[in-house]
Length: 106
Image (cartoon, rainbow, N blue to C red; front, side, top):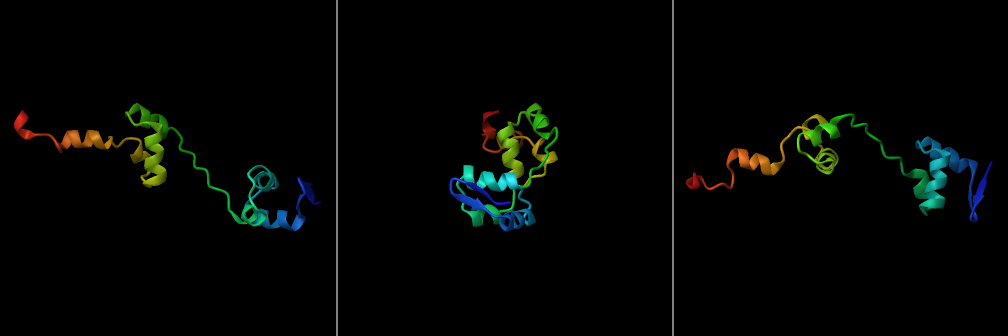
């Protein structure tokens, strides 16, 4: 069955190709009709992998690390979740090590 919407037709062959790339019929339709993607991009761009972070974001907040910082550590800096949730913030590390603190002031 082919589906036409706003003059754009998605053929069964296109649905089949998308399915081979892990893209459902619903997602293919959303990409083309709602997001304005061209067919080639919509069919060939594999879906992002969703990761379940479990309780780690909550643990991070209990350790004074914002969710934003936690996700930045994990997604951008590739720090494992169990470390990203417990490592002190950089500014706290500097304070503990005395970096940037004038030793003569004590």
